[in-house]
Picture 1 (cartoon, one colour):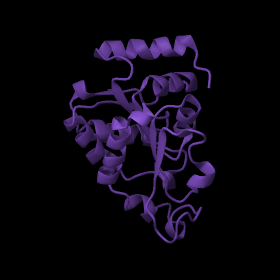
Picture 2 (cartoon, rainbow, N blue to C red):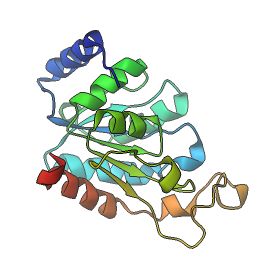
Picture 3 (cartoon, rainbow, N blue to C red):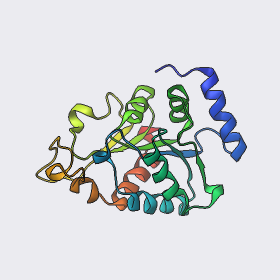
Picture 4 (cartoon, one colour):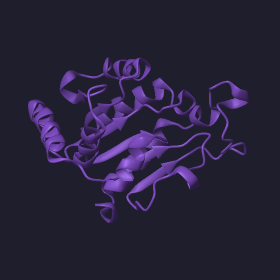
Length: 192
């Protein structure tokens, strides 16, 4: 995945305004094209608070979709301004690529940023609900981990349980398990 120099420079400037450098932050991309592939907001909030308590700097990205930006606001309202950088709705695809490339790790849903991280060989943890991780998971990226709840009904490839657009398999996936996976990936030399 080619990342234009100008896109990297823009991201470096944004980071410099916060006093941060590359590989000093975790990138959280909470959105997905389909709402039934989303992790609940309260879990994102708890995970973000825990990461900040552990001393991590967080950068948030999202599309321009109002619901994605609303979720980022819900998360960041619980954090101190010095602990995060909100770039939601403000990035082009090349700039998102640059942000992923410059991050220490990407945490995302089953969505485009996961595939960009795979192309860039960047550490990533992705959550999968109703879709098949064997078909749509990270491709040739040994630095990526996929998490899912091992329920007998998944992967169902449905738009939520009973067509409800709500997926029990994502709701049940606890932030403690995600935090453990993130820490494992950050600490493992093989993934450096």
